[in-house]
Image (cartoon, rainbow, N blue to C red; front, side):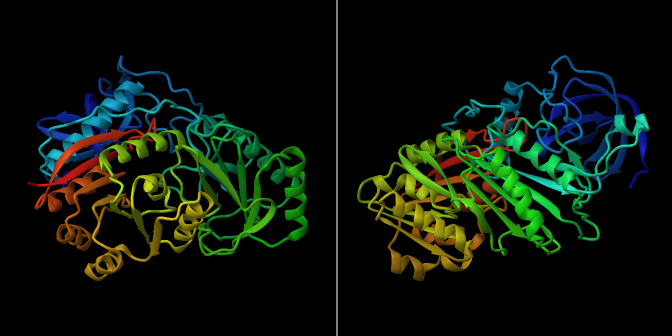
Length: 467
């Protein structure tokens, strides 16, 4: 491995996958963090890791900024770990995401691209998320400007973890990700937590009182707030939540959990519902979807609707069709498609999500759905198909790791007429498509941008049996 070395002036030439950019030097490809640069930038670079086929570099300074840059809109840009592409025009973001999808499908999946669709951009590029989680910490992250000021600053913070530092939290003063009362709710808890004298959480020794804050909103104007406390001090909890209700009396759901574990996950904890309902309700085409504190729901509600409409278009479900919805989550897609099918069978690993899916069918009067909980690789087998029927259409929306090979093999044996594959990771999707290509051909592809100002992209692929 080569030693570290500096390049005084080098141009950033292009984007790469996973939010990186590329520079080239003496025939060597150097990947750099795309949140720091934009193609056309001329930079001073520290090449820190040299491997056989490429190197990795860190930008020391920008010598000359690219004319393609735009001014970031958020004061936290560059310090916060989110919205890393604010300096890149949105049209350029979309073009790069679209290129990433089609490049990975053709290069990894060896897909012959026939019917390609331009990426569907998000109408909202700010305030588009329906869920945010903020962390309390007694170990605030100080920006370079704050360090240089040498001022004595408060070490407590309520905000986001900075990248690669579990113990350091950047205080957020205004976030452009979530609309409604989100910023005001966060500010309330920061101010009241400081006034209470109770300690912000220490993520190294795992002690403190205030631990985290989750805020969820809906397109119908409902609000859910969940607070994590690390100690069961009922007087302090009641005081801060009662004051919150005086300031935000219209909150739909207010709850808390007591978390004394070493991690922040709430899935093994029992929420205490303090005020209002234990859920909020989202609506889509007249359907109602209940969202609890542990529920999964697409975080960009408006763009999720566009995604589901495209899935429905590609599925071409007929009235006598049996549909399988794999990795169904809370059954949003299953219930959205049910009215056009004879029956929909949903399978999901997380039991509480399956319970939500059943409730969502019930409250909407949908009687032609059945949901099962279990590990997809173990549940989906020939015996399961024999008991529940051979599907005519399969919808699959797996996690970033993609589908288990055994799941792909079952699909090849069962051979549904159509498969609609939704993915948040085009790389693993492409890998699975190569396996499925034994019997299926790609009919259409539709990238969808769910997360503006990030490098993440969703993609929908329509597969049909080869004739």
